[in-house]
Image (cartoon, rainbow, N blue to C red):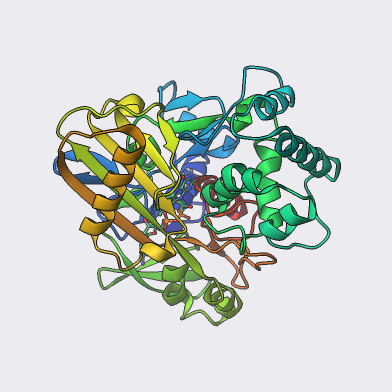
Length: 430
Ligand SMILES: Cc1cc2nc3c(=O)[nH]c(=O)nc-3n(C[C@H](O)[C@H](O)[C@H](O)COP(=O)(O)OP(=O)(O)OC[C@H]3O[C@@H](n4cnc5c(N)ncnc54)[C@H](O)[C@@H]3O)c2cc1C
């Protein structure tokens, strides 16, 4: 039962960060109220319905290293078969394939590299040398630089970069390797390829991304006397004595402490009325962003791709997802274009038709298209550049905390970064 001696906490934003914070606080019986501006929880990882079909705003891959996300999903939806779990495999159709066997780490990576198709012996030796060198230095570099510069320093070959490192960098950091932080890339390698075998497993959700965590998280919070309000945009936050006044639907509500878990470009306004947050606001202002385009293609009859997730080359789309294999949606293919600056401004029709043509070029004739939907997230993630100063969770304003994938941490803008930040913010609430 909630105890009146606990602080009341407002969480602004019902994405993965906000809901992770809410679950952690509710588990401690701390009275929590989540305000979510949208009708749907989940933020940048949310359910979308198109033509009666359950989709997501964007195709998401999780990996076994997402330990905190997996722990919280299990807490709010125990014993559920949430994912199609695949051992690390990267297939770029007709160009490259790598698959980790069920061997203990680090043999699984060594074997995957040794048996990779599409690489020469020299490519494989260069990759092995790079992984060993990084392990030896505990995946730390003295001075951050771009991923491209690091790969160059370790003489990584053209094919190795094109088929392995560049796709991994884009998938993990959503930032092209010419601009991406080598240190953050190494953090991801350390916790995936450099860790236990299961850490590099690919996890594809069998359900939409709101059902995966935010929705059962809200049920969990409500069952512990917490409140989760959707369609409740916070308009302003001001300091009020020792606490905070949070304005929603034109009405002020009082809280002892606040966790602001909105995307960075939305946070700027919410921080504006509290002078002690000026530094955090300045740091947020310096962030730059990368888009992601997700292209949903519903065909009139089934289309089967060779694997749940397949890469293609010579196309703006990097990865194709066969939703029938993943979650039984017949004839539905999802295509993702990460770091998709070039596609901003292209019409939905043109982009969808181009990707359909690329799929046909790779896999043969396709059945007629029933409908398509392109979802462009212009600020999908922050640009994960070298030496980026990310705002801390603890701000200059006592009892006002930040959470979100952009806050200071080891990981790039990912679900795991968001969840870890939410948990960390919750731990500061006393
Ligand atoms: C297309 C796409 C593909 C991606 N692919 C991957 C992937 O494969 N793997 C991966 O790990 N990550 C991926 N990501 C990144 C991942 O989705 C994000 O890192 C994560 O969802 C961020 O969560 P968050 O809680 O920090 O922020 P958000 O999800 O942005 O949540 C913030 C919430 O705050 C709400 N809000 C904003 N303003 C207000 C206000 N004034 N009042 C109340 N509520 C407000 C918003 O509506 C939103 O729900 C992808 C992102 C996109 C867009």
